Length: 170
Figure (cartoon, rainbow, N blue to C red):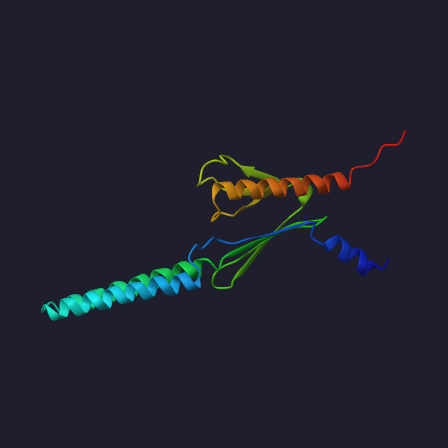
């Protein structure tokens, strides 16, 4: 086995999770919601115009535009991703912001601690800590999703530890 092949085997992830914020309204839903808002605003605007209250039409158009902007900003925030990869020699957390900026943290898995103070509370952060460095992951997940992720990562770390335990003969 060559040195490159050995290095590739060591680099292969034992555990990999891509965390993304949940968005319940897909593109078809977005188009339906915006279509309904525009239809209602336009119809109400015509009615107000026919009754002489034409300035109201502008405000109805402004409301529709503000809803559109708010939904677009929400979708932009949904482009945030966090990738957690565990290999035999390191745990890597890679966060990609909605603007595309990538930030990365690396930890030695043997010393890694997973801290989750109050798993049942929504605001309780899931923190990965090692050698005085720490990073919070999955802040956009629900408490249940963070707990499931923590259990899955702990199990992967446990399995990784058992692979390297010396066997006892005798």
